[in-house]
Length: 272
Image 1 (cartoon, rainbow, N blue to C red):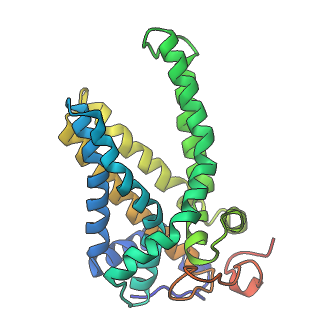
Image 2 (cartoon, one colour):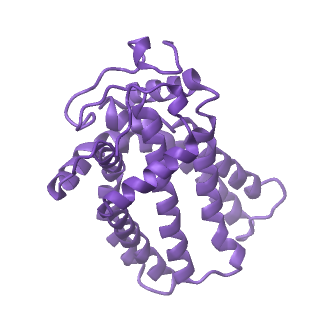
């Protein structure tokens, strides 16, 4: 299994890349299994709190959440290795995740602060109305704005995370590369930009359709959403890797050439 990093734009197909991602997960099932384990360890304490458990249980999730922050980069390196027929060792999973932590944490903070502000305003409005979220255009509108912001962020960050894992250790540079890749490859990249975040949001909303979902349903929805997200990451990684020169370790210890420094390295695109 391999991704042709020098292949032309005719190689791009979301369906084919989703199949490629599923094939990679089948080739090395440790990646989906570890992803499900981490999401389960993160979610279960919160679900136990929801069933009357001590609120202190939520703190159990903090170490898992910190590790997962860098693991988002490790997932992309894992895909890179499998695409090239290589192996990611167990020790590398641990060291790579912590090496990726800082850069992904910075991006998370930058894009998360506006969302936190929106959520805080919504909470204040709901509190001011006695816990009701349906006070006209008040709290409900704020919540809608929050969901819209989350979608916009997902759209804009489509190629930022791969850039952080594969090309640069600098969040600011990764954002520039990611946004320029969307612009340069549009509309070829449209399905990669829009469909995964929309599918993710749909999966997040499904438990609400059951009325009062049980904790087991919520856990199942969390794990299903994690898998949808993981497959989408693989498809987006394949799209990105066709346009970049990437070492087998990605940008773990050093930066790789910017895809936009050399027009030959940008199939279907042009230098900004």
